[in-house]
Image 1: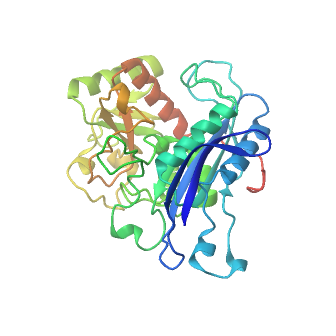
Image 2: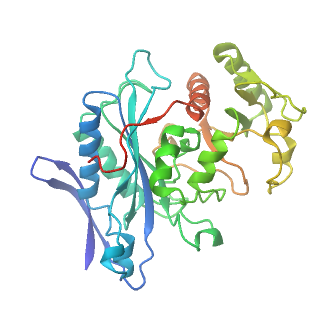
Image 3: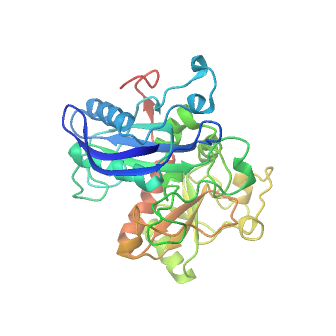
Length: 358
């Protein structure tokens, strides 16, 4: 019997299907659940009502499988909710036009038999149904829904291979493939903090760190980014503009204590400790060695392969958290990097005690 992934509109009495995709159902004996992590955000209208409605509709959409314990045949008393939601958090608006209201943010985790592209289709239709209009980059929005992670993200088999990188309509490298993780979630405290409520052990398959590892790593030192990829001249231009337009200090990360006393910094290339080795010693002091919180990998794109369209993932081999930076529009790239720096240390306050807000 096939299972149905429903992409539809809500009419008050339920979803009406726009498209149905039947895929073979895996038996409970052999089923190894795919995990998915999605994010919610809103700073227009009645934020809490809208986010709660979005969570309800995701739970009813068909992409959320039965709980992992139900699928594995364990006792029902040990089962967990099919859609596990974080606490609601309030955060300031970052980037975009001034005068915006604070955001409500949350994250949800669930098991799924749907591909990342199928989940994204559902989220994008929900955004439209709930009134989102994409008028201004980083502008105020009624609802913002994103696929953050998708794949085999937890359990002992994760470390054995690079699982969870590709989830899409077609095989890796095809025109119909959608690549996850989300290219810029690693800088977003308003995603990492809520995610630790429901998916602290989910592992980013690119560099093998858990969500909690990432959250603690970002918080361990001042916001900082080192650029990789592209050409040296472009990286220098980016650094100079961030310094002159946003007051972000530019350093040479190979100079001892170059970042001492700085509140934030950027470098035109990684320190030698990251360039010369794929394995980073855990006892290196971030302050003395000027290790950035993130590497920003420069990438040229076209209209067809910008997020969330199909696109290529970073080269394999790095063991340090990365952030994808599209540089075709340099003004956009400068603003994106400045927002990434702000996002690493943004204020964030829980406004609910648990995830039972929808």
